[in-house]
Image (tube, one colour):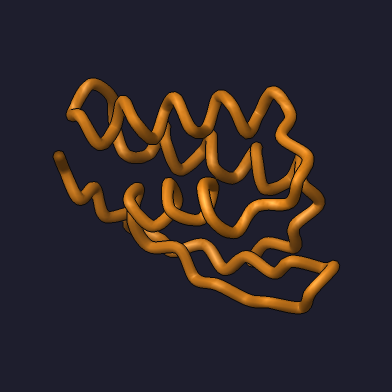
Length: 81
């Protein structure tokens, strides 16, 4: 599995808890999706999981996984910076 480091990290804040996490790699994004996500899992969440898995297997670009993760975070109402 690839580590797939992003050029620009994403800082994600959960407005419900105030928890802030910085995501720098596809692996960290996948971990956050699996362990630290709100109960609601919309279509962007499912897409992000699939694209992150593909990126970790080397089947797609890490930037594509980053964009899918951002879309899922927006869908889940996280604050991004």
